[in-house]
Length: 382
Ligand SMILES: Nc1ncnc2c1ncn2[C@@H]1O[C@H](COP(=O)(O)OP(=O)(O)OP(=O)(O)O)[C@@H](O)[C@H]1O
Ligand SMILES: [Mg+2]
Image (cartoon, rainbow, N blue to C red; front, side, top):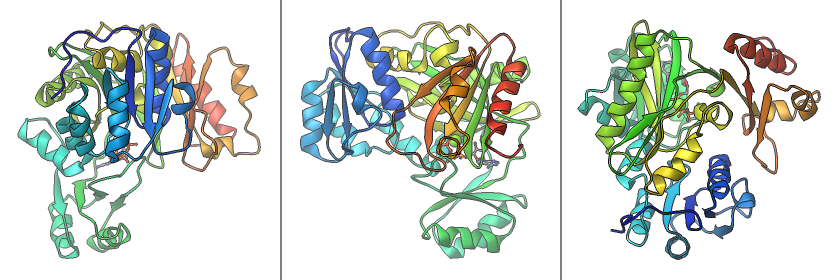
């Protein structure tokens, strides 16, 4: 297995599996520091490839493409969790890879994730596994009247999941997902959703970013508000859980932990073995961004203490907005509080993440109003 012998420094080439917006922002951070970046992605072009030094156009499980990446790079990471763990293991024989394939593999499966939380005493909501239609009635009966069914793999942005109020409804959902293995979990009537991004190095030193409060629309992250409007004990608890999860995984890299706030308690919803949409605020509002830290962790450098420089509200710009007849970037470009990050995707589609805006100012409440006012030009009032 290839391990880092000494820090990888500017001038070296870093590899990233995946060519979407997270790869693009990784590439921006790395190239700014003086690294070269190689993207491996099957698409002809894309958000990351267009801002990187090299683009290896290859399937994620094609050994010749992976080998080309390994030969070109001094260290390799991934921008999305669904890259086959086997591919990461293959790469690891030739080049240092982080996060570790085992950690990525846990995050790839909702049931492995939940089992991992339970094994390590990390609080999470009540859940069980269903593998066939015959399991549904019993699974629903184990929950408290309202439950969520989620495919164990490949779900994102609320896809592959459904809230159910009856076993019949759940059975229909299960069948509509193609009767694949699913996780059933209690519906959580949360007071808020928060997330924490943590960066942990090869020696186990870790730093956490400020806790973000997240609001979703149709299962997709809509806004993140920082500082989160939660009390100090929730903030402390969320940071503590982030350390606990990262330590239990012996994680190297940037890890996101999504949590539900219920009264004075926190329940971990899920983790992502990479920078996260709810951490995009760090591009403008903290002294280092989550992508800066992704580069540093990959290169064997230490994490740095993170400071919030300004309150911030991050607003996701989905295809729905961009396709709207009244949409114009000009509206946002005229707002001195609005920092725009556009991903360079070729075409817009409803629900597709096209860009995000960080509204930066002195008062998070005022920034949230700004974001709401902008959204209301396009969406019916929420
Ligand atoms: N058990 C639950 N109870 C209440 N709400 C839930 C539950 N599970 C999911 N949700 C809501 O749906 C959102 C998306 O769910 P989840 O994070 O599990 O899925 P995802 O599709 O992997 O999302 P993403 O990848 O965008 O983070 C959550 O952030 C939350 O708002
Ligand atoms: Mg989520």
